[in-house]
Length: 91
Image (cartoon, rainbow, N blue to C red):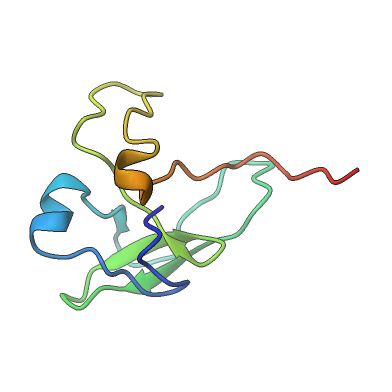
């Protein structure tokens, strides 16, 4: 997740999207795995591609992650964060 985005709007284009490619889907809704605690959706990028959102926030890949499960992009420049899919428990 990119802190310079706002829910429903990506602000990562040009050089940014070369390093942080958007997670895009073909027509149709994205399919969430069973038990996902949030909501998947899409937003339309200015080039017309449909970017996947999680609870409204656009999602991306990071070119520095080369294998499934890697999260090396966590905290890059204090603006890039891995989407936390665990439900929040308040005590």
